[in-house]
Image (tube, rainbow, N blue to C red; front, top):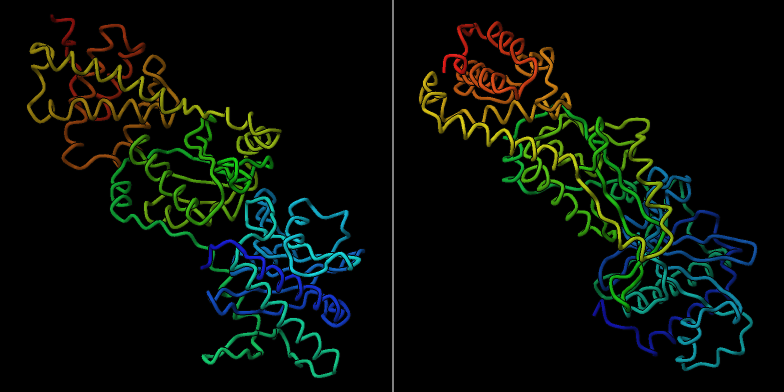
Length: 477
């Protein structure tokens, strides 16, 4: 079983192979940055094995799968997911240290072994590195068995190099250790570019086609959301005995107001990342009920993460040099020093609350107008049915695009809203009723002293749509 706990027998074999590997002097025969791939016979996971030298000796890293290979390449080329998404290691690691340098957990593992380990000057030290998690000792039976096979294969390869029989590699070729149907191990020479092509496929897919269709039907606001993703370097645990992880933050801000639109803190995993994408989509569809025109980030990795979603819902995704709001937000969270501070974090999406308050007020006014036969006598039946939705839309457009509440509407921005934004949000049938509804609405709320400067706004609406400028309805009451 892949998730079963490691047994004393498996640990004994692993430690034995680690000592055998050290005895053949691998640092003398393996080249710097040489990659040897080993295919796991149980799961078909590939481990890309590298030897890193340091002052006290060496360490062996078995980078697991495509994520492991990407983490290794980031390390080699000193690239770290735009600087704010480390740690990126996904590997099993072996180093050697003195007994005094072992952790209590390492020492406890060694005590379980059926071998006289105390005769050795240095001891194998194993670590499991997973993206976003604190490194820990190997507890998993599969990890132990796979690392044992890796050490066996690498020991044989080093012995062949030492005997002058090693594989002669050409160009970007690497050695691939795999197994046949008869469970025999064989070695192949394979171009590294074959593996790099697989590792570069980092795309996340947004697969809810029905939800994407519904989001596509939402109005588009001339707004920009800046979005960021990063780790908080303070590890936490979900339960007392679970593995510690670095919280992974995804946050979106409306650029002009700097209000938080979306924020999630999770552990990093493929499943968690897909959940973040799903939650962001639901925030747009159910909470905001409009699409921003642009989604921007200063990280290419973040834009790549959201790209498929943006493509399917017609939001333009772009990389920009720097985002001040996101950087300030990240610095505030990175400075958190303990788990208690982190658990106390709450995110306020004031922007949504402000729009909700404006709409609630507008809806109440509309309802009062609709319930008055005298106030509605000039509107035909179709216009009455569209009255609330079109009035609400004007409030949302003015708030979202110009940050103007009704008591601060300007003639210029009302004109921009009606000429450049409204036509893209309404059907042809709905557009027919806009002049009558808005001229009528501004007339009534203006006379009630709820819309300063209403006379100029009302007249500009009349000029735009050719609506008559007769006596106001309220003044004739």
